[in-house]
Image (cartoon, rainbow, N blue to C red; front, side):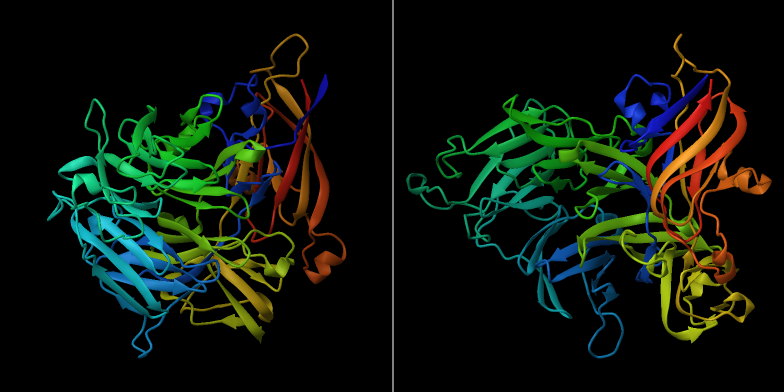
Length: 591
């Protein structure tokens, strides 16, 4: 009996192994067994991610940095590299240089290496406020592109109990007040400045003269003492503790929030870890206490309260090592980029309006591990900045990189599908020289004027195109593979399940758009390429073989198969530096 199985959406991404037989679930029909380096489209398909561009070496080659965005406006924004005792600055995808010609512009800070991942911050205009329990709150001020200053804040009045090793650990703005939370003497304490007067944190007048805009202090009322792990601005103030998610707001919504008009309420009993949450529209995404869950904190009008469902149940296997950091990219595809404790990297697409929540793995070329991630505005969408570590020639190399925008309407020549990559553009040349030292001895992928070149090993900080060829636009960097695998076929028989029964995959169809590289096989990619048991759905034909040009294909690409298996699943992949975008999959199987 021949049965055709269409898969018109892959919006769940790579689903948990615990679900690989749950064909009764909608998530199964939208999922894949493997999805690495393919990102989820809000339209339901998947596309090969672009590569990362090398920006500069990280200043400290012996330990990770922390990346922090500084956004004055959508036109003026920077990325800050925080390390032990220093801050460096980036703008327009380049490191800012000192005006005296001495090199990268930087200023000093007082954070130790262990404190880099723990400090919190908030921004107002040209001022970034920094807090850490071991340091007095400080302000980083921008006076110009290469004129920044960092100094401890001098408060007109401050909270009793603040002092050495007992400073607030969290900060945000709320209702025109700067707000601090969690210090040693009161881990559940919250201090609100006087409205519009951020240096006044303590009311010192007579009780009878207290007004709605005065400074105020409160402590979370709960049966246990569980420290505040984050605070965030919303219609009401959102608070995460070790055991619950809470809100603070006015007791009388018709009156101004203040010392005489406040109330606090527990909303959900899912605790949190001290990882900065990200705000996405009306929702706040926060990390669960043990680091293995990501909760969606959002108001439910039917329950008249905030709820916090777990977003990671379907893709739980990605999060077992614990979430260390997250950064949200609103455009182009609404992705929460998540760095794990073990250095792995996950892209969770969150598009609430389209009911899309799914995760995929991101594996960087050259064996790269992500040690820091942040986002900031760019020209056509949000930029994703990474600090990556690789072991090259026996030594750790730390680099600052930016994920290139997705390949959409560009020409093949402009596609960028290699990691830690660079581009030469100018007069036609055969040899590219003066590569960064860490490339020496490494195999790189090359795209020259839109033509895929054989991989080369860099020697003496240079490489040459084969056969004396020349090109005027040459992309090069560490190669990576986008790899997917369909789930097993367990349905299709009129008398019940086909689970475990032998199946003949008769034909594989991939509906693609603007795709130049895609292979399929019922075997793992490495094994298939070694034995030759794979099919290239995008081979060069006719004049393409003569000109060595690449054609972008759109439509259903089909290939016959002649193999039997217990699952009926197959692998698909793209490892050339070329685009691949898949809209749907069709598998024809004999049961």
